[in-house]
Length: 245
Image 1 (spheres, rainbow, N blue to C red):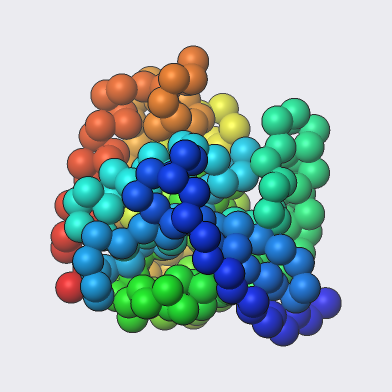
Image 2: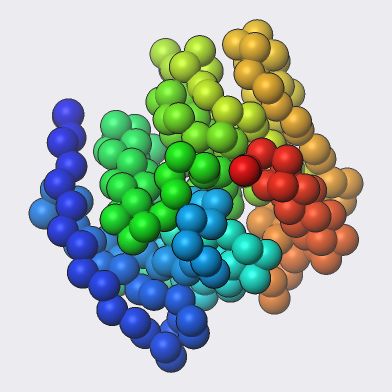
């Protein structure tokens, strides 16, 4: 199915949930979505942040605020829909599965998030896109679409691509950070991606962290690994400095 997105954007501040940031309600093809925007200064470089399979939660808001403290504007996209924040594994699989089956819709939602950020005054011509887990897979989908971003970053993201896709249209640099002990996304998939990027001539850097399982950056979870989280965040920070004006 071909999607043509239309946006209706309504802004409101939710100090209780988001502190200094702004909750952004918008519509894509008549469906409601709710993102999060924060900017420390006019024309700040933009990071488009894509959530994991829990949907846009306080975790992504915390990461957005950390980036704002570093001087970046951040728009945290919503790919599931306003109020859709699944708790059960079966529901998480349902919502991610729907988008894995409809890659064009996934791309439309990412582009809509970018356009929403632009409507808030974000500098979309100076942007890096980053994502966690499912969000990492979405980031690579956006990269394969030919989106004109300066960089694409994944933290323990899904690395497989659908049959028939490749990286021939990819613009910008890729930074892939992965846990060697990840049982969900294997090192074979990591190696395959490295080969695909090399064959396509895409500038890339790929790092693995020994002993780090899937979702190693998620604060407070059993799989959290402080060392891998801090090292990957440091490299991400350096990447942003190197890549954005």
